[in-house]
Length: 244
Image (cartoon, rainbow, N blue to C red; front, side, top):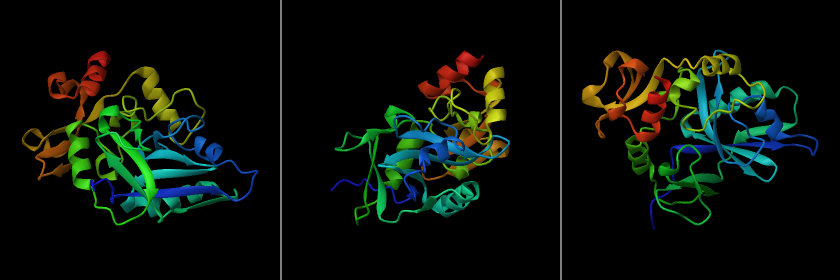
């Protein structure tokens, strides 16, 4: 059996407690992307300053919403969302009966990753004892230059994480947490830094977010004017070139 289970991921379930409650509308006023249409989409919950706190994929499950997020931060995400819930009739909790699966090849019931098709295919299934694919997923993701998770994105302005290029933000929807600064940066076309995946040998110690010694790679937060499109993946180099 192929290894597909991403054990480093968890699912946070948001469920309406009565028929008058709309979970999508609740999230729509909080997260960076438009969750009113077709799902899954990539999105984030930001600080008021527009910096990344939690990134996730948003899935639908009938009237419920599932957030495909890092397992290590899932309880913190539940707490953060609960602060915004106030008295709304919505249950928010980690769903321990489900698991996130990934394959670089097509799979029955899977959908292409909404960030970048080359990332492969993803699906949700009941939790079982299938073998983990986390190491393969990490190597595949980093080989494509795609950052994710708090260790790589945390406390970085959302547009500097390549959110536009990775389909993680909508500039057409209404307000959300951190929207003002994010929209201003987009309007001014002023993204001064970018998260990039680089060989450890070329990593700038002062601008390094995290290293992966086994893969020989690092995630750096570098000034755009210091980047060369020759050293970037195609999806990122075209964005850097067009912003020059």
